[in-house]
Length: 171
Image (cartoon, rainbow, N blue to C red; front, side, top):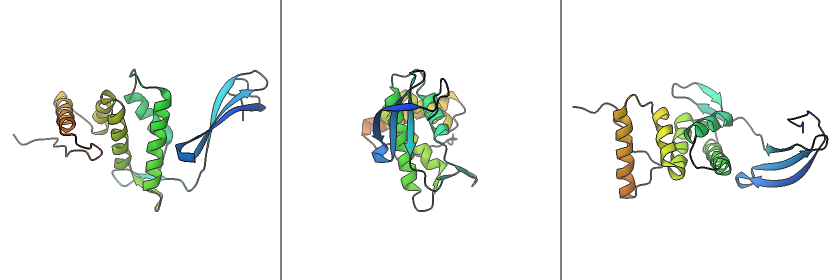
């Protein structure tokens, strides 16, 4: 493994830990040239999971894109990086499981998985992500989502199945 600081390829593994139900391994390493400590991840790579976008276009699943969206929603929130990594792995594992037969999963399914995990983790992050994911266009939609969230929480509903969203209610 190449050291990110000095580029040397000689390192020593200090610790290995299984992640994502044994689907990946996290290794803490130290460069033998400059003593810089860094982390690497190993995971089994099978046939690429494809994401089916809303208009039918397909693109490869990109954990980095998922991570950027979740990190953005959790920006300046009291959530540890370890919890974020755990949630990302859970979402990735669930998406892979759902796409196991066809190696495809709908982007909408991934978005709903993210919303479910963020709801359980941090309600502010949930609203932030929902506002982008559901393309809120005004303050009224934020208020409606928060009211719906409060009502569903009071009723003890499972939000893994989102309530229908009426973007343009009849007046």
